[in-house]
Amino acid sequence: MPLQIVRNDITQMKVDAIVNAANESLLGGGGVDGSIHQAAGPELLAECRTLHGCRPGEAKITGAYRLPCQYVIHTVGPRWHDGRSRERETLVSCYRSALSLAAEHGCESVAFPLISSGAFGYPRDQALRVAVDTIGEFLFTHDMTVYLVVFDRKSYQIGSKLFSDIAACIDDQYVARQPYRRPNRGDDEPRIQYSLRDERDASEERIRNWLGEADGAPRTPWAVREPLSLDDALKRLDESFSEMLLRKIRESGMTDAACYKKANIDRKLFSKIKNDKHYQPSKPTAIAFCLALELPMGEMRDLLSKAGYAMTHASKFDIIVEYFVRRGNYNVFEINEALFAFDQNLIGA
Image (tube, rainbow, N blue to C red):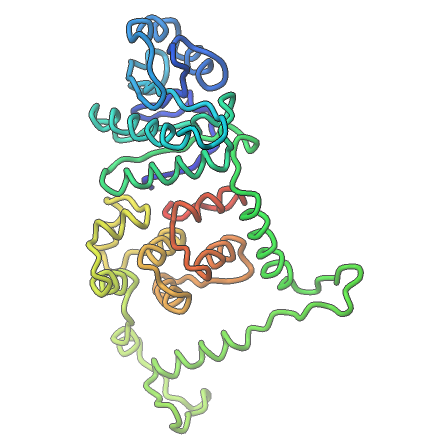
């Protein structure tokens, strides 16, 4: 997947390059900067001395020495003042400069920390938004795998209102549908249990259509219906996930590349899906394409069903995806921020 948010120690990432959130001297410091210098050894500091510092928003590259990568890309983030002192522009420049250096040196994988979100005081939810938006924009025109590395939960934060809104949605849609839930103290009456009648009726209608029964026509009782032979059943195979996906991409007017990049899907994986009409994608991959195509919930369910999946309110993952789709937000990167915050699988993985 081109952009992944992971919890890890950046000095342990086996990638082509890691990015160091450095200070202007490039001679080491605290936090991520100190950890990288300590893990790389004194040779890194010796090379950094030859670079004569770095200005905020710019980036410089060195060897990695004892680190399990080839390069360290050093960039200096902005110190937070009031949000009106070009902090965002400088932070965007950090990511762009580092990514450009990585591309120039042939890197296929890069790991970033959340730049400026520590001692430099940049609000973490805003720093995360800048990182995701800037990296996502770069990946739309470049083939590269980028990891946004978070050391622990405290260093990761989405907007508090978004978090509380999604948490409330999960409570309404997920908790309320658990069978035999005891009503909260003070509730006037128990919550209504979830019914599967609509889904059952819809499933029966799909079966009738598959059997060729027209609406209004007398329906043959199941017990006396002539069973299909296996050969006849196989001849009635419906459109596969791959076939429907490619058809919808054509109908949307998007190019294949635009679709899989918007879906945060690797080009090689897309090629497998395209060249094998029976390819079975994972659910996060299938949903990624639904989001890239900006399908409404009904069409999303149809495409997912071709891969054997359904959207259900028994899954926090599904509820979070639906939360964004119902609000017209199909941005895979933003949805992944929320999924990561709630410890769910990421879309496109």
